[in-house]
Image (cartoon, rainbow over all chains, first blue to last red; front, side, top):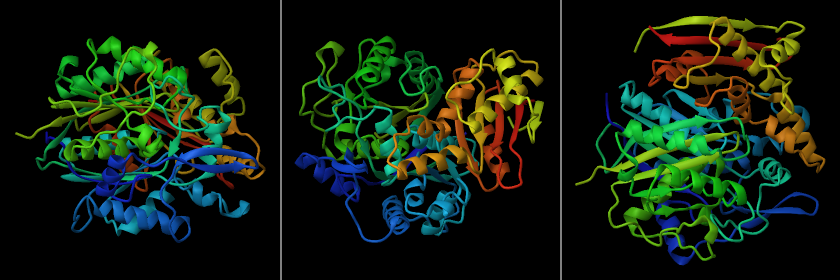
Length: 356
Length: 162
């Protein structure tokens, strides 16, 4: 059995095209969402990537190459590649003529990504809505732990498309203005675009992927289920050989939903007593859906290593009885990252600082 | 845990004419607001578990589903509704693999590790599903809607480590 480490990260999101520019933007206070029209007179805010030249596929390929390159040199590129996305290439399909749409299959998107990277290794698609990237990390970790691979590249991708924005809007899950995780005035989530890359490796590095868990509960397909939150946290802790008291920081889901944020807090309180410090990243980059697990992990690690921390410039909901940390905890050995998603998906990952 | 064996293999390709009635009989209700692809997945998963003579999937088992085309019909319909500026909450939901996983779990009255993953080499997807799985094993399905002259298919295996 090999241990699994985080050997590199890459990120492009509303805040910038690479981790240093993302952190610099966060330090300056971040970037507001921009309105996206989904139908005549209907707009929703989205934390969008900066506009760039080219058609949808050209922008995808250019961004993927840039973000993957941030994780270092891959040599012959024969490692497994995991492409995690909720929307896949629906943004491309929107621009196709109706009778040409969906002529291929669900693996086409990952094939385009692999070609952009000149990738030679096996290519997997993972699509489980908001938990896609964390599920890809769990699968890649299985490969490395079982010594089927020394390394794997996980890329989470959510690019511009009206389909997803319109779908979430139609389900009345979106906020009309901005994301306010755990906020007193929270009105829903705000979507975000991102491409994030995680290099997983058996070679020791500072951050160890100590364990994780994925729990699907279909009883509430658009919401958080408390027993599934319990199960994902306890499963991730058990695989990591840790107890609740060993966790020093929780990166919460907290998408800004009036109901789901409250369920998440109550469920976490039932596992962690007392609650460790909490951090939320969605007010900075939005909910990046299938990319969220990779994007928020890359951002959080960058924040810790660079001494930057997301500010909370809105009042929190006092009835939740929680606070969001204003800086990285001084003692920071074990971090729990939680992602809860559309379709009843709940996933947790334990990241351990394996440094001296 | 390198050796596995199948305790059941269920294939419906195509499903029988009365498969929807059969599904309703098996799970005690008619699925509501569920797309064709998801319903095919529910039918195959339930039939496979019945064939394995298991009333319930153990909590420690995994569900893994693969599909080349996924919820093609719902996705196509959703794009058409988007073009027309129509709201499409149910069509959008039906287009999502995650909703299929949720409904499969719900019809099995099961909470656990379910995922949708695919690879051009289907054997690799199955191999990946087995890695790290617990002793409760795996319920693995391939589900496809009808395409051109190819009939719908829902094929499932209940696999456990030897």
